[in-house]
Amino acid sequence: MIAGQPSIWYAPSLCFVMLDLRRFKDFKVTDPVYSSLMLAAEKAGDITPAIYNRYFSQCPGSQQLMSHIDELVQGKMMEEVFRLIMVEQYEQESAYLNFEVKNHKYAYSVLPHMYENLLEAVHYTVRAALRKDWSEEFERAWQARISALIGEIEQRQDAAY
Ligand code: HEM
Image (cartoon, rainbow, N blue to C red):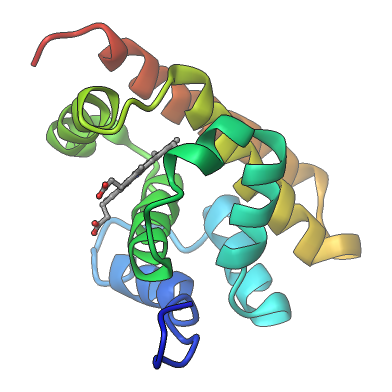
């Protein structure tokens, strides 16, 4: 937490990202990944701290790497992670992914396996928040989305943009 500031930084992130995405005409609210995130926000509120707790417990090198970052930056990064997870076609994200993957590799020393651990932490936390409302359909949609996003990230790891 930032000294003197209330711990509200995370709270709006997931809801804001979802509302923002709905402004786009072609955004499908029928996407099971979107629906499950919406349910998680309704049931558990701000899930960002739980995601980072899970992530750091499963990927200790990442905790060290992010140790200089405050909750505000963690929250901003998670907004982008939520946004990317809710994207169904990554073509339109090409320039953004080129920039972030390169930046994360060379400026922040992020290793490839850390992305998968992060996305798995989001998946795990959303599933835990939904409990009995988690379904086969959600599981299939999440596995497909994570696999697609990881594929996009992996193909940029060695590229020189
Ligand atoms: C798809 C996955 C990811 C996305 C979209 C993403 C996005 C971002 C964004 C937008 C920021 C800048 C936040 C700001 O300052 O406003 C950021 C910062 C950062 N991210 Fe990520 N990130 C991802 C994955 C990761 C992973 C796996 C790690 C590994 C630990 C990581 C480590 C960092 C670090 C260390 C910073 C802060 C760098 C600094 O300012 O010193 N990120 N990320």
